[in-house]
Length: 233
Image (cartoon, rainbow, N blue to C red; front, side):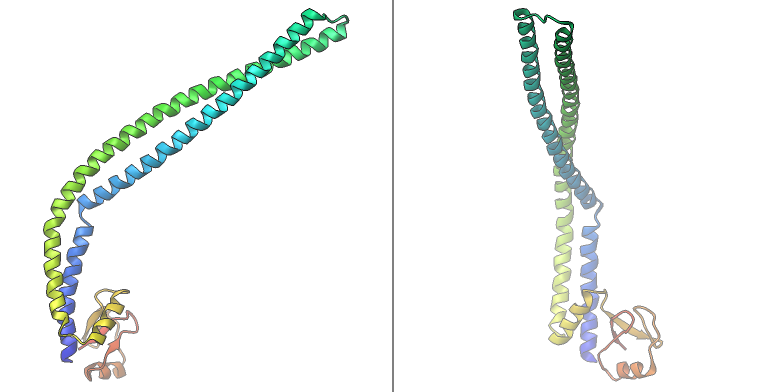
């Protein structure tokens, strides 16, 4: 029983240390810092994606320009053929004009696509500039918040280290096997120990059978079947 009381005393200081650690993690400055960090990562990802899209559009534009040059060459060949050997029948004239019309339509379609790519590329470049500025501003805010958080957390860290030291000093009075059981339970629920109060587990307020109550009062190690905590009298 005395060992249980030593473990209870350790738990009291251990939970205080956890409360300080949780306060550090829940710091508004830290939350802003993490939010700003996520914003920077998101903007970096967005910037790279836009950059890849701009590169793809530039590659497509090069391909289309080559296709335009090919179509213009075909159109010039048709003109040269017409001048060198004019068609002699209406059917030949019609066939030649169909080829010429097809080349011109193809060139117009390619030129329209090039104009669309240029417009979209310009819009992407403007968007990329906005993203770059947002990322730069977020980086400045991040650096400032980081300095604030480091200054804020330093005093809290000193408080936490002192509290951890107090808890560790008390752990020397606890049986190692009992402390190991405590730490195992704490991975699933905290605090891992509860008092027996009016025949109930004070951790979850579950009423316990008389046989279990007798074991607890007899000094046995008993875990609550509902919450899993170690119950002591």
